[in-house]
Length: 264
Image (tube, rainbow, N blue to C red; front, side, top):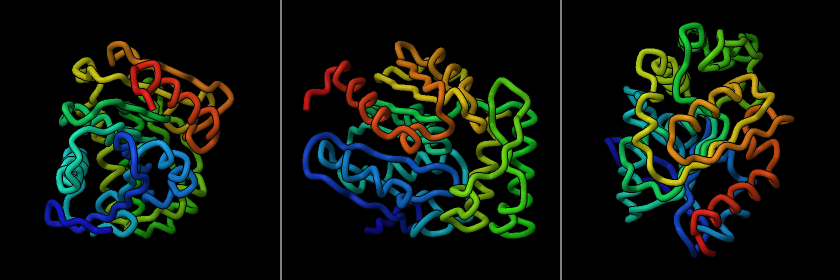
C-alpha cells in the first residue's frame, strides 16, 4: 500500500496479525522486495512492516535525500499506521537509517537490531562514496556494473570492493542512489558514534568477520558505543548476515529478544 507523508507517496507492506511490530529497513539502493524471503518467517511471530525508502521501489522520487529525512519518513509512516513502538531492524544502509531513527525517536524503538552497518566513515571512504554518487549522476545506474564500489569501514582506509550483483542493479533511480551514498559520506563530517551513548533500548549488533563493505570494526564500534548492547560477529560471513546465514541470524535474534523479556 502507499501512504502520503512528507509530500511523498511512500510504499509499504504489512504482514502478520499478532505480536509487536517488526520493522525492516533495506540496504543501499534496495527496496522492500529484498525481504521477500524473510517476511514469512517473521510474520508468523510479529506484525512485519517493510517499506521502500524515498526514491526506492514504488515510493516517490524526492528532491532531498538526507539521513534526517529518511528517519522522519519512517516516523511519519508509523504515525499514519498508528504504531507507537517497534522492533527495528536495519541492514547495511538500513542500519544507518535505523540508528538515526533510534537517536531521533527513542520512544518509538523497543528493540534495535543492526546487521553489517556503521555509525561513521573515514575520510577516504567519504571520498569513495561521493565519487560513486558522481558516477551515477553523470552516467546512470548501469555505470555501477563496470565501476568500483567502495567500502565504508570506519577505522580503516576505505577498502575498494567490486559492487555486488545485488547492489549493481538498484531498486531506485539515480538521484535516490546518489542521495543515499552522499548521506553515508556525510558520516565522516557528522558521525553518529558520539551520540550512541544516548541509545538505551536493548540492542543487538551483528557483523561478518569477512565483511569487505562495512567491516566487522563498524559493528564493534557501535557495540562499544551503545551501553549494554550485545555483539555477535560471524567470523566466516561477509556483508548481510540475515541473507548469508538466515538460520543463524533468526535464532540469534529470537534468543536476544527472549533474553530481554519478549515473551511470545
